[in-house]
Image 1 (spheres, rainbow, N blue to C red):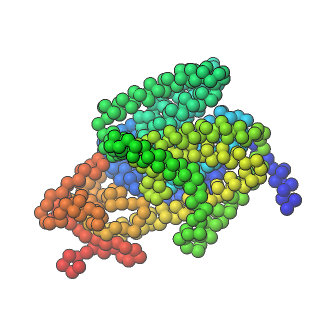
Image 2 (cartoon, rainbow, N blue to C red):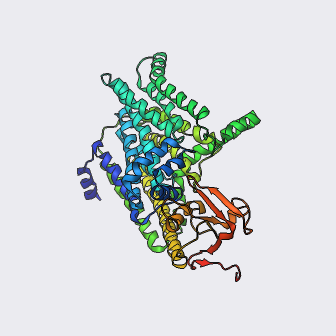
Image 3 (cartoon, rainbow, N blue to C red):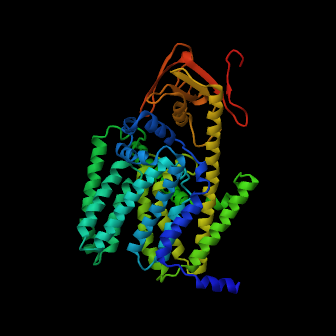
Length: 522
């Protein structure tokens, strides 16, 4: 044991190695079997629309939701192409970039605390609450916007520190802030975190710091108000997907609305800061994996814990009192955490661990990671700190491995579905409505599978067929199955035109075979 300790002491890693260690952890956590993952959920229809119906149709798709976010797709999709594995790699790289940017931000704010900055970046990188990393085409674009926000924050910090290049950094930060606000709502209120960063960085009395922080923040506030004004009065689809549930409750009954809001906040805090990290530990024994896959997961778990522990043990950096980091960074983390909830609580949502509501964990990742690192910094025993961080990183990796198995299983099921379908149904008449049972998949719906369905059965530029799960569509989206009824559906861009004269009923429940149901027989 002493020899091992002596060898470890002879190995040293400096803060400069952090960027590469973050890349190593990203690869260990997310790259296993990346080539066996595919397209999922909304990204499958988007891929079909762009690569078969054309870029203009994808632009139309985003006009009713996030038109500026859709412009980013126009830049990335022709470069990356229709290959799922390429999008998987891009999503991993971008996730790593966001962690590196957080590391840079914390190092710029708290240069005397490299270790807690490393912990926060690691937590941010492998945050286990958000389980949709492998929906890679879509979340690559989330991470692009998140990177833009983090880069804006970093430039604003550099602007305060570097008087010579101040306005150059501020100009870049303003531009990036506008891009963040225009593209999506997930990180919308995080812009207000700039004010608290300025206030903490600036010297002087409370009054002097507050006054100067307001002056520095004023351009960001004007950008925020300008974009908000556009969203409220000029973007007609602002509330098309999500109504402002919280405002409606406050208007109906102020006291009840306040209690509802407090419940949202407290439940979100427990779930995003603590339960997200406890869940992988508490559920490790109920993974539902087969013996071989479970063995591989355990190897990954112990390898991650061991290698992270080795790196933390050999990480050589002078670090001052952790309590100081906790006091300063903890407040910033709490501010960012609270601001994250603005876009989520407003629409009446509390983040969940189940798909698809786990996507609302995404804006909380930043504040939660800084908060957790601040809490660990309060522990006085350095070895206990390292052990705890290594355990959390290892178990978070096991959580993503379990999710990866479900994603890969869904992709295999989807491939088997369409392989058997094309063998039994070589072609379909234009305007055919296909009714099916609910397929045994997690990350697909009938809506998302309609994309590849048309990729197979429709010529380029057309939408000839549509897939409905009968249990949720008949009597609702499809009002009647009586013959001779025309049916029309606007499908996030193109419009499907069909008739109930052309209904095909199928069943697919693996390991059973795909079946075409004959109404005269069954």
